[in-house]
Amino acid sequence: MDKCVLEFTNISFTPPEPHNMIIAHTIDFNLKYNITNANVDSRKKQYFEKFLESMSVCIIYDIIKDKRREIYFCNDGTNSMSRSSDSKSWYYDSIGIYDAIKNTYTVKGDLIDNSIY
Image 1: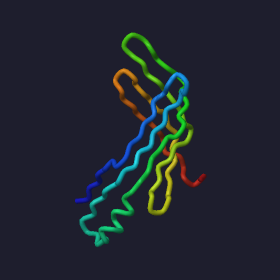
Image 2: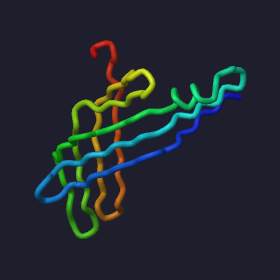
Image 3: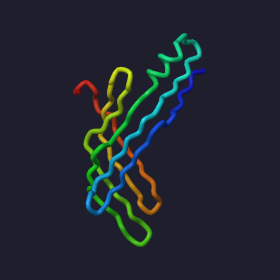
Image 4: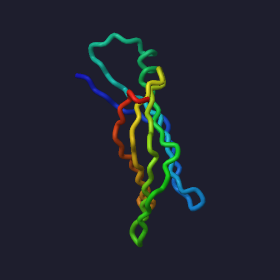
């Protein structure tokens, strides 16, 4: 059976502040794909498993704030995820949603046709 597991190795997050109304994040992770019938050197396998995803400047376009909520919505246009071993990248349009009260952050996006990059 083939199984895929995400292993987060480094995560950074910058929430919006009154003097800097953007959101930013970077996620380094390993995509561990266990292939039962493959004969791959373990060092090479570890090298090919490393990925980076980031949203460097997500500009706030809406804020919902009342007694129970403080939610920031941002858009960065085009974000990317790349594989470290060969710099192959995947691009997507996305929005970020940060709930300051619950201290949660969600990114939702749609993959863009990579042939245009």
